[in-house]
Amino acid sequence: METRIHNATIVLSQGDITEQDVDAIVNAANKRLAGGGGVDGAIHRAGGPAIMEECRKIGGCPTGTAVITTGGNLPANYVIHTVGPVYRNGTSGEPELLKNAYLNSLKLADQHNVKTIAFPSISTGAYGYPLKDAAKIALSAVKDYIKTETNIKKIYFVLFSSRDFEVYRETLSMLMSK
Ligand code: ADP
Image (cartoon, rainbow, N blue to C red):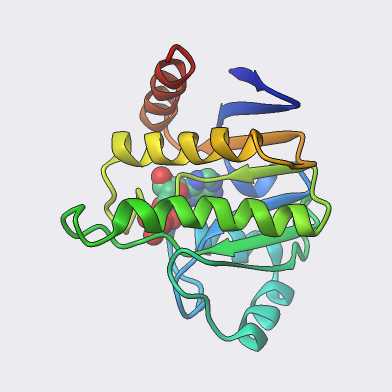
C-alpha cells in the first residue's frame, strides 16, 4: 500500500526488514546497543559483525535518540539504531519517546543523504507498546516529518506479521482521511 504526501511516499509492506533494498534500515535497538532478540537480533545476524563493532565504539543510545552505523552485509548501506520506550502504563512519557525515536531516525537519515528508509514497528514487540497506539504515533510522526524540509523520497514500514500490517494499514487510512 502506497500513500503519497508532498514529495515523498509512505509504503506499507509485510516482510523481513533485513531483506529491504533501501539506503537505510532502522533497528529497534536497546540503550546499550548490545543486540538482542526480535528485529535487533535479525539485523545483526544478517548484517554480520561490522555492525556490532561500530555499536561497541558508539557505546549506547538513550531512549528516543538514534545513531548510525554501516549496513555491513545487508543490502542497505546504513543501519540507523534507535531506541523506543519500554511500555509501562502510557503515562511515563512513552508517546513522546516513541515519536522522538522516529523523528530522530529520520533527521539522521537526512543528514546522511538517505533517500529510501525502512522502519520496523518500534517498541511493539518485547517492549510491549500497544500496537494501535504505536502505529498511530509512528505514522503521524512520519507524516509530519514529510511536511518539513526533507530529501527522503520513500519511507517503508516493513511489518513482520499480517496483523501488524493490517493495523498499520487501517491507521494510515484513518490518518489520511482526516
Ligand atoms: P522492541 O524491543 O522495540 O519491541 P522487537 O524486535 O521485540 O522490538 O519488536 C519490534 C517489531 O519488530 C515486532 O513487531 C516484531 O514482530 C518485528 N520484527 C521482528 N523481526 C523482524 C524482521 N526481521 N523484520 C521486520 N520486523 C521484525
